[in-house]
Image (cartoon, rainbow, N blue to C red; front, top):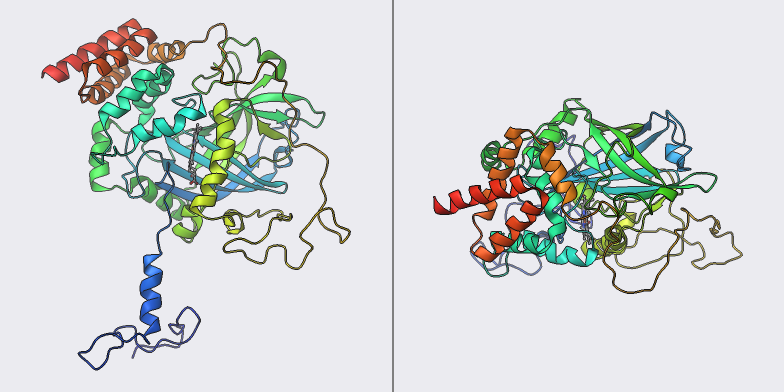
Length: 488
Ligand code: HEM
């Protein structure tokens, strides 16, 4: 028997010592199992229950802890306590992810990357659930499940189908900007450390005087942008499917702590109605010449989770988790997300997911009358579970977290408002024209590789029409490249 002085005794889940972990109990040496071997049945039953539902999107991801430090005074824009003064530091948990792949999928693929942050502030947890792309494919939440169905496995073939991807994209011209971004050089980041993060959406900031601003967040990587070519990515995905996970964990273990500089674009509320683009349309950026970047602070990741399942898989981010000084904009996609995430968490993790260590507030405590449900811990203890009460229970502040938004017009299903320079193609064309000749070639080759796999000519033709509308040269080159591949 090996030295046992420094080791704990192996026990059952109720803590009783286990005598034999090598041999099951049987009726005689060659006989069948005995039902009294509860240790065996407990072990097998727990094993059967090890998997929880994976995230319906962003299933594959990596997480780390760190902090956010304010480096510039932005108190004229927001009263958020954690942003109040330079030098203030707040604990953060970050989870980066790919979108379409299942839990075991390769990291080095062409796909947007999730960039989800949880700030454990003294006024509650603030979640900023963004991507590494400044824009998104669609601008109405009712299209999200359909869009994602085309990115995931086909119900018959069981794999992602180019027909589905391009059918949906060709029928949704608003995707043209994001698709151009995705097939550009930044479409396959070399690692999670070498990419930027964006809120993508517009959010509201409100200052202590009650003055509101529209804000977009940009986290600029301090490691520099590094991308993979399509060939490099295919090679890495084949030999090291976990390349992003390995890279992030190893960098932090080695003390090479990745960091990002947070900058924001700020639009006075009064400018929104007349701005040349709809400022709440998630398929558009705000050009920096209109709204320059303003520095806020630095995000640094310096601690790996101890347990990937407990802390990364069970982490739950919700765009609806705001703190005083920050709120939603009328962006319809964002509004849809305010519902979708906590609902997903209740399904995936259960109603008490907010009590898990990674999700609970760290710099304050949650204090309310929500009680019980599956897996309740002792949150609330013996305190009265109703309000108002005369037993010293928690009280409401009467101070809204964010400022009211002006609305007008009839209820109904409305298309997004179109501003003076808006259409679904203008910014896609601008992005294409900004690219170097080499990048244009790689962009067209990547797109053509996908489009050439589509089996129906009408889908190909409709897709080409969207790229032609963005830029005539873009469309012509893509048409030639697709033809060459299909005839070749
Ligand atoms: C209406 C549109 C959208 C809907 C309905 C939606 C829904 C969801 C759902 C249900 C999840 C899984 C949540 C979980 O199980 O924990 C998720 C994850 C995620 N989504 Fe969205 N999403 C939308 C758009 C977006 C956009 C525009 C972005 C980025 C700007 C985004 C970024 C993310 C990220 C980063 C995650 C992973 C969070 C994590 O690491 O746990 N999503 N989304």
